[in-house]
Image 1 (cartoon, rainbow, N blue to C red):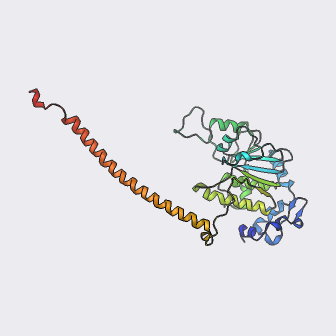
Image 2: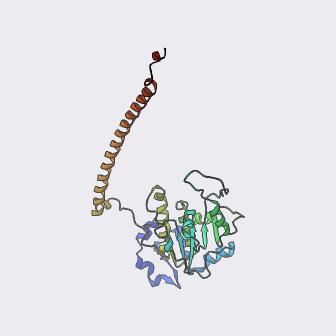
Length: 309
């Protein structure tokens, strides 16, 4: 049984039933747990164990003392600044230069930078309109960050650098859900068994890049929910909006209305494309005529050479 089927067969009342909760640790009944998630369920027997173990073994700081919740930041402007920066019960986890650029000095306790670390030399120019991922300013901030910085390798020039536990996380969750930083953050957040995991600035609303990243986030959100971890999503985010139910979704009034409008716009687009192609042909003809007349003007407009004999 796949995790999606597990979640589908488990309603919210079952997850929140007092008989399944012991001292704040979620216990999931064995009839909805597959072998691949047995170890995850064991985490729920002691909320303090994973966080304490990781901090003791690696000497790293994962949040304010006594934190109970984890906020994961993306880079969508619509909701990133709604994160609870001033609440010490929340640990703030961020990633990417685009996220950093919007924070403007706001608190972050943990940072994730798993891209190949290539600091850009100060003063070296880039292509017009572009900026390097590891700009001098961002790289300086990473070096000065007071909390843990998860990276793929150790980097002595970044004091807070800790290698992300890829081997451990993939062993627990498989290789199919780690296509971007946010799922990796979610997997590690689940390891800590917080009361809540919030996602701010994580919309993944459109575009080919999000097409494969969005399901991985939804997968880990499902895992966290099954373990009794509260998921906090601002209304500005559409991360958990489900795809159409194949075969059924096409019959809804909204789908039919939008499909009609889309077909109308596709028709207009085709007309515009046809007009543009005709304009290109006409422009080429005009350019050719201009070249010809300019040549004639410069070559044949002067006095006849016989006039100078």
